[in-house]
Length: 159
Image 1 (cartoon, rainbow, N blue to C red):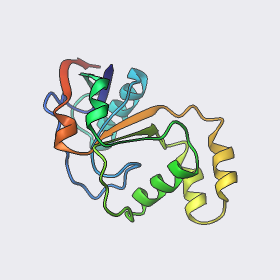
Image 2 (cartoon, helix red, strand yellow):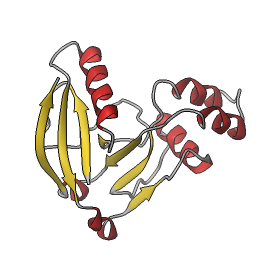
Image 3 (spheres, helix red, strand yellow):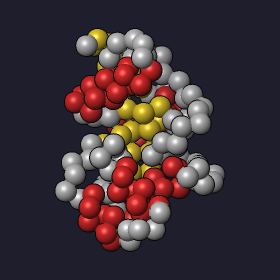
Image 4 (cartoon, rainbow, N blue to C red):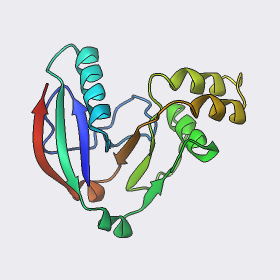
Protein backbone atom coordinates (compact mmCIF):
# COMPACT_ATOMS: atom_id res chain seq x y z
CA UNK A 1 0.00 0.00 0.00
CA UNK A 2 1.06 3.60 -0.57
CA UNK A 3 1.44 5.90 2.43
CA UNK A 4 2.06 9.64 2.27
CA UNK A 5 3.84 12.06 4.59
CA UNK A 6 3.14 15.78 4.21
CA UNK A 7 5.71 18.28 5.43
CA UNK A 8 7.60 21.42 4.51
CA UNK A 9 10.53 19.30 3.28
CA UNK A 10 11.31 15.92 1.78
CA UNK A 11 11.68 13.07 4.27
CA UNK A 12 13.31 10.15 2.43
CA UNK A 13 14.69 8.74 5.71
CA UNK A 14 11.91 8.91 8.31
CA UNK A 15 12.74 9.24 11.98
CA UNK A 16 10.78 9.29 15.20
CA UNK A 17 11.37 12.73 16.67
CA UNK A 18 10.43 13.34 20.26
CA UNK A 19 8.67 16.66 20.71
CA UNK A 20 6.45 18.38 23.22
CA UNK A 21 3.58 18.53 20.71
CA UNK A 22 0.55 16.62 21.90
CA UNK A 23 -0.55 14.54 18.94
CA UNK A 24 -3.48 12.15 18.46
CA UNK A 25 -1.44 8.98 18.78
CA UNK A 26 1.58 10.33 20.64
CA UNK A 27 5.17 10.42 19.48
CA UNK A 28 5.80 8.81 16.12
CA UNK A 29 6.17 9.31 12.39
CA UNK A 30 2.77 10.19 10.93
CA UNK A 31 1.51 9.13 7.50
CA UNK A 32 -1.82 8.74 5.74
CA UNK A 33 -3.21 6.65 2.90
CA UNK A 34 -4.86 9.83 1.54
CA UNK A 35 -2.71 11.96 -0.75
CA UNK A 36 -5.21 14.82 -0.25
CA UNK A 37 -4.67 14.65 3.52
CA UNK A 38 -0.89 14.62 3.02
CA UNK A 39 -1.17 17.71 0.78
CA UNK A 40 -3.16 19.47 3.51
CA UNK A 41 -0.58 18.51 6.16
CA UNK A 42 2.21 19.75 3.89
CA UNK A 43 0.52 23.11 3.39
CA UNK A 44 -0.26 23.52 7.11
CA UNK A 45 3.25 22.53 8.18
CA UNK A 46 4.85 24.92 5.71
CA UNK A 47 2.55 27.72 6.87
CA UNK A 48 3.19 27.04 10.58
CA UNK A 49 6.96 26.84 10.23
CA UNK A 50 7.26 29.71 7.78
CA UNK A 51 9.91 27.95 5.71
CA UNK A 52 10.35 25.28 3.08
CA UNK A 53 7.70 24.33 0.57
CA UNK A 54 4.78 21.89 0.75
CA UNK A 55 6.27 18.47 0.06
CA UNK A 56 4.79 14.99 -0.01
CA UNK A 57 7.05 12.02 0.53
CA UNK A 58 5.62 8.74 -0.76
CA UNK A 59 6.41 5.32 0.71
CA UNK A 60 5.44 1.77 -0.05
CA UNK A 61 4.40 -0.35 2.92
CA UNK A 62 3.88 -4.10 2.79
CA UNK A 63 0.80 -4.80 4.91
CA UNK A 64 1.79 -8.43 5.40
CA UNK A 65 4.29 -7.29 8.06
CA UNK A 66 1.36 -6.33 10.33
CA UNK A 67 1.47 -9.96 11.51
CA UNK A 68 4.98 -9.34 12.91
CA UNK A 69 4.26 -5.96 14.52
CA UNK A 70 2.18 -4.76 17.44
CA UNK A 71 -0.58 -2.77 15.74
CA UNK A 72 -3.48 -0.90 17.31
CA UNK A 73 -6.15 -0.19 14.69
CA UNK A 74 -9.15 2.02 15.32
CA UNK A 75 -11.64 1.31 12.51
CA UNK A 76 -13.67 4.42 13.33
CA UNK A 77 -14.06 7.24 15.81
CA UNK A 78 -15.51 5.46 18.83
CA UNK A 79 -15.12 5.64 22.62
CA UNK A 80 -11.87 3.64 22.62
CA UNK A 81 -10.40 5.93 19.92
CA UNK A 82 -11.62 9.05 21.73
CA UNK A 83 -10.13 7.91 25.06
CA UNK A 84 -6.79 7.16 23.36
CA UNK A 85 -6.66 10.52 21.55
CA UNK A 86 -7.56 12.42 24.73
CA UNK A 87 -4.94 10.52 26.75
CA UNK A 88 -2.29 11.39 24.16
CA UNK A 89 -3.40 15.02 23.96
CA UNK A 90 -3.21 15.24 27.76
CA UNK A 91 0.06 13.28 27.81
CA UNK A 92 -1.33 10.64 30.17
CA UNK A 93 -0.76 7.51 28.07
CA UNK A 94 1.48 5.12 29.95
CA UNK A 95 3.51 2.25 28.56
CA UNK A 96 2.78 2.59 24.86
CA UNK A 97 3.76 -0.76 23.44
CA UNK A 98 2.57 -0.33 19.87
CA UNK A 99 4.76 -0.38 16.77
CA UNK A 100 2.01 1.24 14.67
CA UNK A 101 -1.26 2.93 15.57
CA UNK A 102 -3.86 3.40 12.81
CA UNK A 103 -7.10 5.33 12.97
CA UNK A 104 -9.04 8.48 12.15
CA UNK A 105 -7.40 11.90 12.33
CA UNK A 106 -8.66 14.35 14.92
CA UNK A 107 -8.11 17.24 12.55
CA UNK A 108 -8.60 20.99 13.05
CA UNK A 109 -12.37 20.63 12.66
CA UNK A 110 -12.62 17.81 15.19
CA UNK A 111 -10.37 19.33 17.84
CA UNK A 112 -12.96 21.89 19.09
CA UNK A 113 -15.35 18.98 19.70
CA UNK A 114 -12.66 16.98 21.50
CA UNK A 115 -11.74 20.03 23.59
CA UNK A 116 -15.37 20.29 24.69
CA UNK A 117 -15.22 16.61 25.68
CA UNK A 118 -12.00 17.13 27.65
CA UNK A 119 -13.65 20.07 29.42
CA UNK A 120 -16.55 17.72 30.26
CA UNK A 121 -19.04 19.88 28.36
CA UNK A 122 -19.87 17.00 25.98
CA UNK A 123 -20.47 13.37 26.94
CA UNK A 124 -18.84 10.53 25.02
CA UNK A 125 -22.10 9.98 23.11
CA UNK A 126 -22.45 13.68 22.22
CA UNK A 127 -18.80 13.94 21.18
CA UNK A 128 -19.03 10.94 18.88
CA UNK A 129 -22.36 12.15 17.47
CA UNK A 130 -20.72 15.46 16.55
CA UNK A 131 -17.72 13.71 15.00
CA UNK A 132 -19.63 11.23 12.84
CA UNK A 133 -20.68 13.67 10.08
CA UNK A 134 -17.07 14.70 9.56
CA UNK A 135 -15.02 12.79 7.03
CA UNK A 136 -12.08 11.80 9.17
CA UNK A 137 -9.10 10.72 7.07
CA UNK A 138 -6.84 8.03 8.40
CA UNK A 139 -3.43 8.32 9.95
CA UNK A 140 -0.73 5.73 10.42
CA UNK A 141 1.66 6.48 13.26
CA UNK A 142 4.89 4.52 13.15
CA UNK A 143 6.07 4.52 16.75
CA UNK A 144 9.17 2.30 16.70
CA UNK A 145 12.34 1.90 14.67
CA UNK A 146 11.22 -1.66 13.94
CA UNK A 147 8.08 -0.32 12.25
CA UNK A 148 9.99 2.35 10.31
CA UNK A 149 12.23 -0.32 8.77
CA UNK A 150 9.24 -1.53 6.77
CA UNK A 151 8.65 1.81 5.00
CA UNK A 152 10.24 1.88 1.55
CA UNK A 153 10.88 5.37 0.17
CA UNK A 154 9.47 5.82 -3.35
CA UNK A 155 9.35 9.46 -4.42
CA UNK A 156 8.94 13.11 -3.51
CA UNK A 157 6.34 15.54 -4.83
CA UNK A 158 6.94 19.24 -4.25
CA UNK A 159 3.98 21.58 -4.57
